[in-house]
Image (cartoon, rainbow, N blue to C red; front, side, top):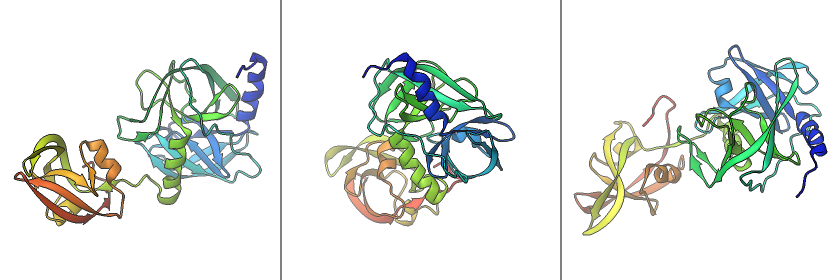
Length: 291
């Protein structure tokens, strides 16, 4: 599709009508009205903030409530009385290509609309952030983000939003968190205040092991939390987890994807080279723990 340069200002105007400014005692940034009354922004902007004020597109400053934060994907949910404001139009099936023209729209604490223009610098499939968050698609910009654009909507040249801008997940480039990731994380933030992560209470590392005479890939348990689901189910240090719920557990990322909070699962381990199976219920990861 060919986009006339003269149409870009119109695209910016449309997106600006759904873009808000956000400020805390320490930081300021932007957000986008994703659903009625629900703004999506950057988690790093709101981290440990006791309160947040929001600037509507008409410049009015109103109080807002932080509903949830997920540092792993750098996404946060904020709610307020949005009245008749319309949510941004999203490109739900977006498949950006390197070189595509994109732009971000921000709003500063005074209500001033600002825009930044650039290109998609890199694209790839699903990836993990350095904080362990699962991102459905890599969309990296060809440069960094200007101050105030953290949490801003990023749109294609027609004005459809392809995701939310983050400067917390890459040292040198702005990253766009795609629509699919925002939708998935937002549902959990609104329901639970955070993304629920499964927890076994173990520390583990990938190894090559033997199971009933056959070589297998698995995760060697190096330590156990005394009150964790794994310890209560009878698993031991030096056990090698081979499968969970019938699916191979060949990496830490694979393990995370297999752990659904509240699920009752069968865990197959290699213990001294022989198969041993236990049943356990996946717990929710305590917020104060890392393992």
